[in-house]
Length: 479
Image (cartoon, rainbow, N blue to C red):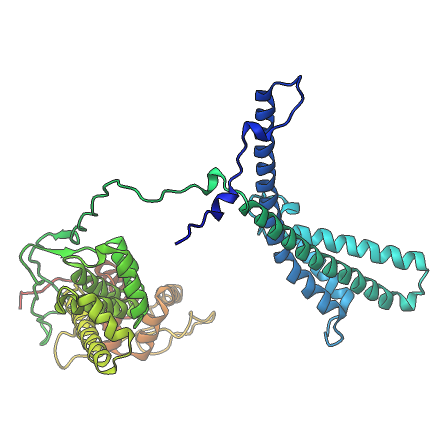
């Protein structure tokens, strides 16, 4: 079999016999000059290639924008006048320029940005077009038409010129790259076979666990008004207590893994191949904990993705040592039966988790301390004297017992009632206007205890509540 030595033709070597110099110049100096010349030309070529690549990249960004401006100026179907469009674009680039610029340029300098370059071009085209019309002594009636034509011609010239420049630079770049490949340099050297021992990567550690402190047993007390009434005795409930436990925490890698879209089996497979710390002990449990948290925060899409990825890891584990390959082979190949079994399991698990989150919220609400209004007896009802507006300027008191009343004091009381009512939130005002005790209690139940106590005190002071005795008494457990 003949050997191919053609690759050695690319070596740029010199030997003493290759150098022919003047007898009065020592050969060592000639050799050094020859080497220096080779290195200088090589460096010049590298710099030229970098310059051409940067120039081509910049021009390819500007070219479609210039072409679009030319197309809109020359189009007859545009509703906006070409000169108006040109002026508005020029003004926009001048007032709100983008900071996008070629790599290495300063985005804070307008002339270094793409918008700055385009603005300079439009300014040049505009100046040339105005000078052209001025020199031609165009009539005022034809001025707009001639200006539009001059702008179109100016933009067409630059579109053609920039297109030719890109083609020329690309041809020159290809020639320089071809010339560069003719010679083997130190930049082309790379390691071939290495006998160094590379130890295997250590096994990833399991998911970290977060210690949960045992909560203290607590009771919920309902502060009620008029506790003598039937139904005012509300039993206390205790918060769920558990032994000390630990929950797996979501690692940054698993957090990224949980964001892979639903049924994104190919992306999940690629992610697992690149991140060994996904298939570790506790990973599926950490994803389920994250799903529970996300569902509780209203992030339903993320919660379902976490459940999906958790079950995905569980299936891979249950399928044995080669479970990852077997599972994804079935899913990616489109095995409908296997995919249906898996997705049904995901839906079932997610629905169960969603139910647990709802139950947890209900338990939390049930254990919340509340202020409720309760009548003194089953026969009594609680009413609300809701004012319809501030007291009138001319107030007339009629009926028995009003002879000794001071009109000014009555006005103050009515004004206080109106001020207190308007200080309440809108949903509380609406509940009071409807006159429903259940609606008012619902609003009070959603408030903090301190806030609800303040509301009840204001209702009593302003005379909106029909209780004869004011204040709030904690009578829980005394009936």
